[in-house]
Length: 506
Figure 1: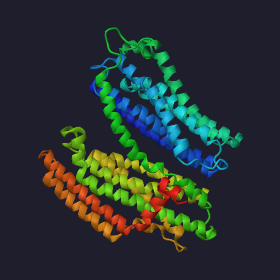
Figure 2: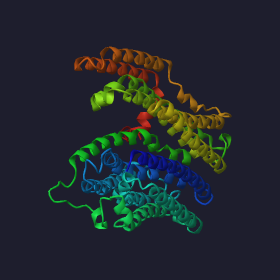
Figure 3: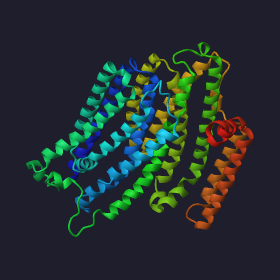
Figure 4: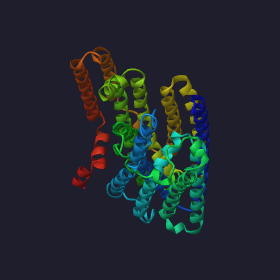
């Protein structure tokens, strides 16, 4: 396949992916608007946050590194497709392992929702994990399709699977709403099962056909797609295996950073404390006081952590990349990208808390309106991503994410301000750190930036350790400022976020 053909197919695939994402968001918006009229908001919240996070975490950690490694330049040319397929089948046992671990976390470490409000949570967790493992059955076929530019297969498969998922959800919500989370579990199992079926049917029909011979497809029978060893060759290509491990470490960090804000478990707290759709004066005042106090402390907590990451991330991005990947990562745009991403982490964390409260307090009508806002933001994000990436490359993409996240935060802040406007509580004060802490952060930012320019990172390990020492002293100063001035935050962390301390004092 010529470079022009590859470019044409890649452009077509990108266009289809954009349309697919827009279609998925529209369908999700319509589905949520429909189901909210039949089931509780708490149930929808658990599905969209807890269970979807479980599924996305499982499949991402199980397959992302394999996809990146096996679709790297030269796959199938410099490497044997037999060994690539064998390597890809390792996603299945890895997925089973992640499923067991994540199910244990979701059932025993995270707070279990009230079974009266959210029935069948335990079975739903298991079924969503099973759906993730089921989707991994199609992973070798997915990589083959992407590598050989089967442009329409992905679009058709995911579109049909999404339509099937929405259809079964609507039918079950109308006819068997008492099933609770079983409805969404069945729909998600159908979605992943449909994906696997579409890929399997396509390759069963494709293998051995005239089109396959014309494209010199590396396999001829369905049995060739199963793992097996060729005579005289290792089971897997160990070069690709090592590359996969490198991508796995990167993917694990990416998952924590990009999805970390969704691990907040305070949505259920706010949903239980507040009566949805009622203004602050119509609520139980002691409940509102607790909610406002927790919201203020959460905002202060994520802000302090985010500011520390931003300040020290700026001065230590170059060193971190140099230690992790040597000059290959530290030379070029890598440090700039990581510095920008440090700022994005701050916005992610703040947005996670603000939307956590907003989604728990909004009425059904407000949720419907917010879905429209999210749809508009999604479209604008696609446009901003294109324009800013064209203007500034990878940095532009991060800036687009920051702008999108900033708009979401602004919307939530306006809602929270309006919600508490007629009351005595001002939880948004959590976004105002103490002057001493701001001073400590500002001094640390200047000192570590100067230290980086003087001691890092081309002057040997001795000066690098000096830079690390300067950063450690500055970080200690910031932590002392937190301990001295943010006593309310420290008390909140001790009593609410540290289980051992909480059990000791209850």
